[in-house]
Length: 215
Ligand SMILES: Nc1ncnc2c1ncn2[C@@H]1O[C@H](COP(=O)(O)OP(=O)(O)O)[C@@H](O)[C@H]1O
Ligand SMILES: Nc1ncnc2c1ncn2[C@H]1C[C@H](O)[C@@H](COP(=O)(O)O)O1
Image (cartoon, rainbow, N blue to C red; front, side, top):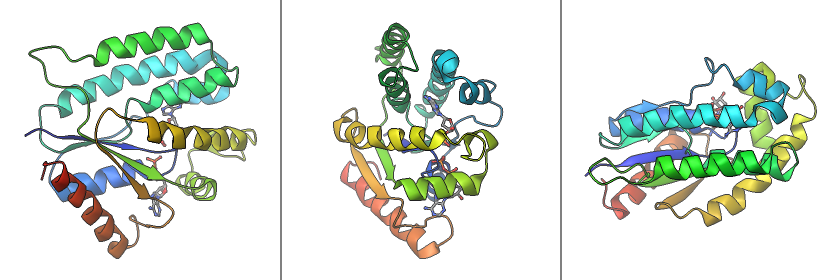
């Protein structure tokens, strides 16, 4: 039985934190989204029009490598699903920041790369965990983490970008049907600093893993 668990949710929702807590709890490996040594991310925040395609191609490459590694183990946990990249890209097309043709090319490439090939491990996750947060929580946590290019002090127009991003997440989660899914209330549970909340969240996830037959 091989299970790949992916975390999803807006920037600062707590994906990396819960990835590490969950992998430790399950005794499995955590795979983190590459941020600090990502050469495109700072460029993207300076010029989204120019760098949306490159950033998503970069992430696609990185995430596929992690998916292939995780697919060979049991209960490995990935920080952010590959499917959310389409959400970001789509949002940028809708707001006129990215080009629809670039989006279509990226979409086709991703479909091709994610297709199951007989004789190779499945690339699709077995469970998606979505951390829901309000704008207030999201902004607070982005501030707490302190990556310079994400701060409203660096670029006040990011507030609108973050608001817009949250609007795209609800329908995206509702429509997501690649695997079983579940939502964690990231406003309610402080799974980082409160051990009772952490235990509660882990219980909720264990129950879901049992329900889908993976624990
Ligand atoms: N549930 C939570 N309660 C309190 N603080 C949190 C929670 N989730 C995340 N944080 C804090 O918010 C910041 C962003 O969390 P992180 O896990 O890096 O989010 P993401 O990976 O979704 O961008 C970090 O400083 C982290 O300690
Ligand atoms: N596909 C993406 N398009 C634009 N920006 C993205 C994409 N994937 C991740 N990001 C950004 C958002 C954050 O600034 C960093 C890391 O994400 P986080 O939610 O903090 O783990 O990358």
